[in-house]
Image 1 (cartoon, rainbow, N blue to C red):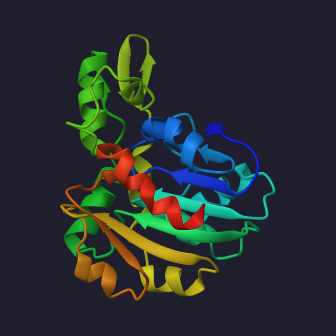
Image 2: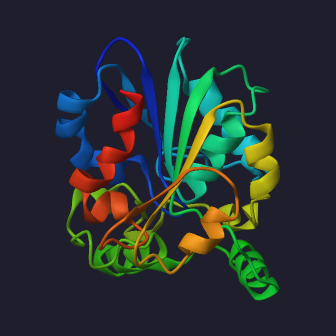
Image 3: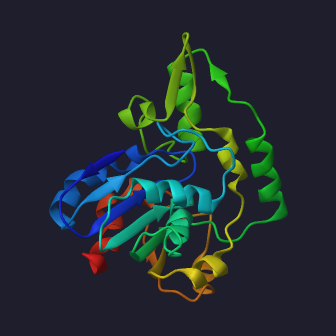
Length: 244
């Protein structure tokens, strides 16, 4: 888990499906200047250095994240995609974490039967092994949506890989795909935190209209796509300005 800063409030940065906490690495110098308290960026269960779960649900993921949070009177969560949904679950109050603000960036809020069937099929596959790090890194960047945004030789890619006996695989547990579609209306209704939904203007995973229908404040980041926090940390970090 990456962490930094001191004091309050605590910021929890949660990555998306397939990625790791290292995707927030470019944020670290900016957080030192722009965030007044502590921050943490863990690997979600089944990703990076975190162990897998027997079953993946948004509440199960949130329970693990809650266990990583030291007591803090004020907590804000900025989560990307899957991480945004986990942040909403964390804000339900059932995990003993006083979340006051959740910003969900790039959450896919509308799912088709085909989407769900594809995810279940991926969840049932064994991990793929590769003969070289470069092959595994290329797959990792595709799965995490970071292809074209992060060089294959970047340490961010290394965090998503594992080597064993000269072969390479993704650190991600394929079972994480089984988490399914979030019940966004229910998650928002039970949230005890102020909720903001954000997206990159060109994110194919959602639309402005889909987010607006959920009845909470929305923000569209101009010129960016699904991984807006990686494409432009400088623009994306402005999502925190209201909570500093």
